Amino acid sequence: MNEDVIILSIETSCDETACSLVRNGNEILANVVVSQIESHKRFGGVVPEVASRHHVETITVVIEEALETAGLTPADLSAVAVTEGPGLIGALLVGINAAKAFSFAHNLPLIPVHHIAGHIYANQLEEKLQFPLVSLIVSGGHTELIYMKDHMSFEVIGETRDDAVGEAYDKVARVIGLPYPGGPHIDRLSKEGEDSFNFPRPYLEPGSYDFSFSGLKSAVINTLHNHRQKDLEVKDADVARSFQESVIDVLTKKTMQAVADYEVENLIIAGGVAANSGLRAQFEELCQENDTKLSIPALKYCTDNAAMIGAAAYHLYNNKAFGGLDLNGRNYIDIEEYSI
Ligand code: KG4
Ligand code: ZN
Image 1 (cartoon, rainbow, N blue to C red):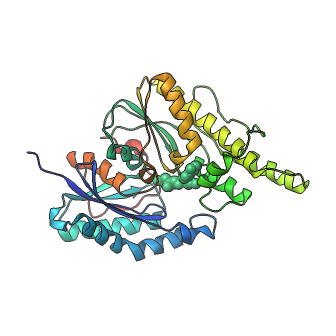
Image 2: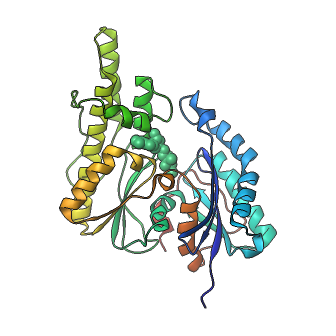
Image 3: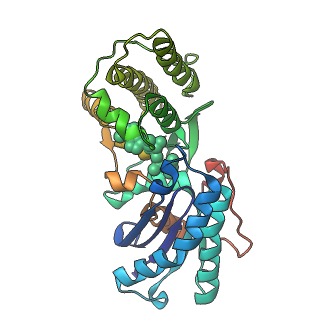
């Protein structure tokens, strides 16, 4: 049997309302993403209630647009996939209820997908995943190192003990006075500055692959406040550069240590912060020296989208890992539970 598997996938875990149609886990037939960033900007971060309301207003439109773009009808589909979590519960529920209704109305299997699995599988939209691999997930909500020996087999080997790296970027950017989300602004500004502050590198205890960014974030914010209080001149670009260098040092050292210890030849970097130019450049250099294959999805698949959910769902479909109509959103789910 060689039938195509076409999955309609929905992602609403944070501030993007997204729907995609993906064939056989890697061919994108439609990818619709409606971002709410403009609405959250004035609050300096995502407001959960505002996010849920926008999802409610937009979800039907993105599903219709995805089907229209692909020129498909529900009769052409094999399944409906949706992000089950982790994420903002009210936001998740909008996508989940839309997916359940669609699945019920068209008699299609429902596939619950872990958001982080989606970020990793974004890479499959460009090339086949090669196992074993280590994946570093760096986004606004997550900082995790995951070891995979095969498809849909997840072992969390490191994670943040406090702030996610994107969250630290966004908070530091806010104190500097940059708009939300701050990551891309710090990235840009850091190119004009020097690492003159030499902020702490929080490596934690030897042997641990965990991360901690709240101390670094506080060090940056305190430095800025102290300078401002004393009316001392401080170059924002130097602060941005110094912060970014500390983040890059920690992320790359811990990750390359994991690559060596787990004896993998493939490294995937995913999530919104994977867009960072300094981080990419440093990983490229280290992986080249180390003969490690580095994969970073295209920018638009690094940030939240539904195509990545459809890519991961393909393997769940093949394993008949379906959910029932009692599916609920969960703000935290251990990805190891998803291993099949
Ligand atoms: O994956 P994502 O779109 O959403 C979550 O699942 O969280 O990641 C968003 C995060 C934000 O914190 C944003 O500031 C950060 O990714 N980000 C960056 C860059 N582009 C986006 N951080 C550093 N450098 C960038 N170029
Ligand atoms: Zn995400």
